[in-house]
Length: 83
Image 1 (cartoon, rainbow, N blue to C red):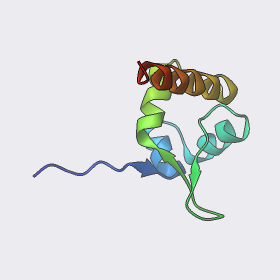
Image 2 (cartoon, helix red, strand yellow):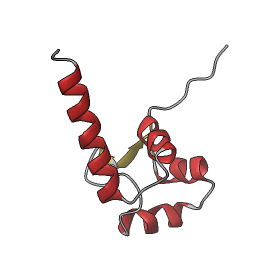
Image 3 (cartoon, rainbow, N blue to C red):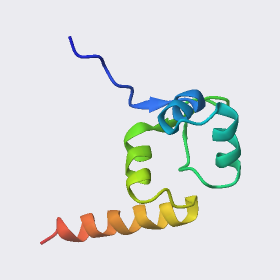
Image 4 (cartoon, one colour):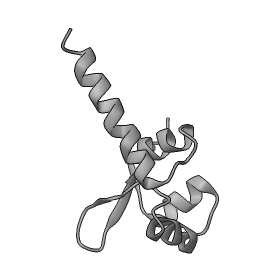
């Protein structure tokens, strides 16, 4: 039986993915060095696992650069699907 992989993880899960501590996850988050999490409540941030993988493949850029890359990718996808 295949084990199910989570779609989103908490800070401890991000830490396990990146081999860093939970505290370091929050430090990186507060410095703008991680993608933004989604909020499942006011105190329930979760990071999308597929986005973390894509962010790492892009070289783990800071949040501002990452958001620009995502926006550019969305624009490319939008213009490519029109033709």
